[in-house]
Amino acid sequence: MWHFPLLLALSGGLVVACSSGSKGGGTGPEPGIAAALELLTAPPVTTVSRSLLTPAPVVQVVDINGDPVDSAGIAVTAALVGSGTLTGTTVVATDANGQATFSNLSMRGLAGGKALAFTASQVVGVQSGNVTLTAGAAAVLVATSATSQSLLKGSAVTAKPAVAAQDLDGNGVAGVAVTFALTVGNGSITGANQVTSASGAATIGSWTLDTAAGPNSVTASATGLTGSPLTFNATGTNVSSQFTIDIQFLGSGTPSQQAAFSAAKAKWEQVIIGDLANFTGTLNASSCGNPAFTGTIDDVLIYVDLVPIDGPGQILGAAGPCYIRVTGSLTILGYMKFDTADLADLELNGSLSDVALHEMGHVLGYGTLWSTFGLQNLVSGTDPFFVGSFANAAYLTEGGAAGVSPANCGANVPRSAVPLQVTGGAGTALSHWEECVFRSEVMTGFISGNARPLSKTSIQSLADLGYSVNANAADLFNLATQPTLRAGEAEAGPVVDLTQDRLGTPIMAVDQNGRVVKVFKP
Image 1 (cartoon, rainbow, N blue to C red):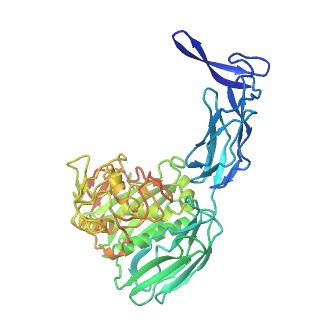
Image 2 (tube, rainbow, N blue to C red):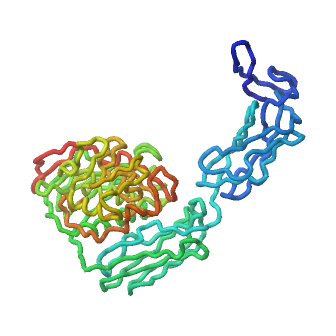
Image 3 (cartoon, one colour):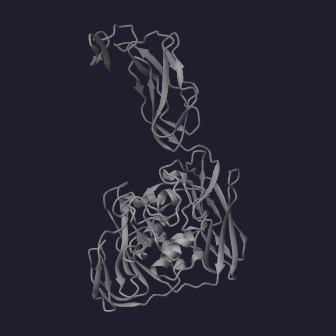
């Protein structure tokens, strides 16, 4: 049975009619006249990126009854349905049998479901069924963790060296042998020999720095891949942090999920080094989401709640401070909520640790306490910026100067202060650095790219809140020469939308006895 529109010529114009025909009957073009395209040979159900489609698709011209029409010279065009690129000869003329054979087509792009659409002038086109594009051969080795960090000498790194084996289109490739080797320093590593996972990921078991202060390096190698070997640097310092974060899970998480939050906690404990006054008393349950607490907190307590929210691909979660100190206005207790429907995907694409780091930053005050401290200049609604002197000084020196003018922002506007995100709505706008400037930096409103560094600008924004910080704990970051692009542009690596990830509940300032002294509206 065939269904296709018919163009009927009437005085005054064309009328589109819907017609269905079957062999032996129907209305519209006479039998024997080209009316539609039919897939004589469908493309394969699965194909490897950049490989020839086998079998080659063959399209047949048919009449209103679905019978083959021997019409030669009809130009048939093939197009890809879905993201990616279709290469080869995409326009083929029908032969004497009315058939067009596409003998050298291939698909390339991110793995997933695609389809082929075939069209020709004045006939009804046809679309294939689903074609699943899979990764091609491993070609590139890329870093998926920070390649530079600074931490206390003799300690285990929190941002463990991690890589991904990818094909030429950025798809992860499984089964690639990766070797990690200690090349500088007298530290130690475990899990030196790894094989990439289904997503192409491989991570060292552990890396402990030399007990003497100074440089340390580890390389990651995969035979025959561009980019290999990759070097990861870590500087052992004499700086010892006095800052402590206590994490308590309200919903059960897998060991690997809990490890991601532990890594984020350890990173922030390296960034913030100054001790805060202990809190001893009672904090009531609040609309923030936290349960009641009685006891001593040194320095920050964070509840992590893993719960169903709205299914995969929607709101990932939210985080922020619930209670802050009256003196200094810094966080005592915070709450982080994550949708369990999204956690597995975050683990699979290697972004869970960075998402945890990002949300923990909101608990500590990034984006959530800025208005409390008067750190936002909102005079111009189209060009708001951060006014903290420490963050701005770092911003002007992290690759570029006062005239940072990224072309991908839509306009080359020189900036002299850290720009804030304008779009995204409540919970995103004015709570993150501007995405088109900071791109893959971990504290933007998107987790994007293969490596998501924590910049000195982000660390120094905490100094503007009053924390004592170690700016040398920042990852290698350059505004002008980042290897990845902003979210929404063509790039390797996952893109995680952190829309509405800032809690919109009131923040309560309490005295040492837990008495609420002031409430700050969201």
